[in-house]
Length: 112
Image (tube, rainbow, N blue to C red; front, side, top):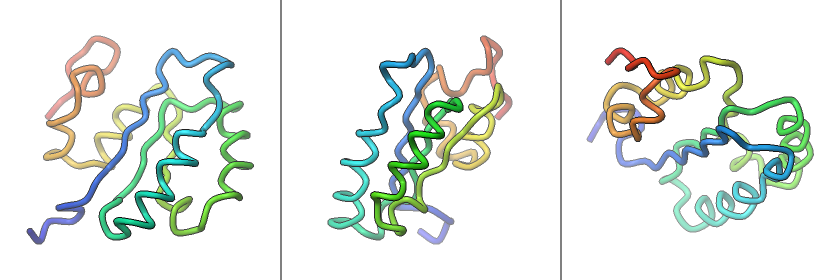
């Protein structure tokens, strides 16, 4: 398949409702290096949203512990339009396969 990103994996971490106890990006710190090491061409990107200032600060430190090839594939999504940012980054084909909660913006069906 010649489409951009075809045959690649995109990881989506939905942090909706995450509080102070959920600010640790350990999932990415442990999952991504193994995926990139064993399947280097498979990971397109990891999308994390919505992120707040606290998560962003923690990620800035955690990012330094990751290889550049891994850290560069992580996309932090912030703001009230983070779901729209995710859909734009994934494109229409992959966005159509997202769970309904990520295809929706505040209860309104997202345009296709």
